[in-house]
Length: 177
Image (cartoon, rainbow, N blue to C red; front, side):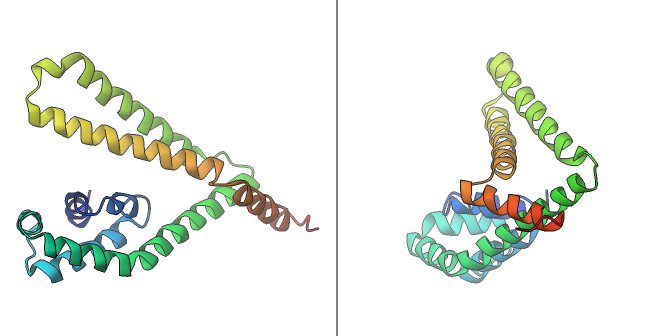
């Protein structure tokens, strides 16, 4: 995970929507935007110091949240564009008659990672220090988020989205109408 993504995730306690913006193919770009906004407000490049300054000054947090609200359209557009590009790539793969092996492997890896982390938490929790439990819980959340995104991508967010995909498939296959 890049430093910018890790820093952005550490700032998510002040604006939980950050977690949504720093997933998927646009994660690095969106993380840099979020971190740049935090750096400008805190006047520091150190992520630990940023978090400390935000915790000490609720006014800075409000300014940060306001700045993110201003940037939200740009960040949401980046997410949407990434999702559309991925859907087009998947559609192209399917139309070419190939199996979407990469997507299948991603979902399997996320599911296995989630199962492993939850198993360790269930069966070894007593033997683990509190920090390890926290880290494993966070990693479990990330794997769960990956699965949520995969399901959201696969099944679409609405019936209208599915209809649009069907129309796009028909156009690409030459069955307009």
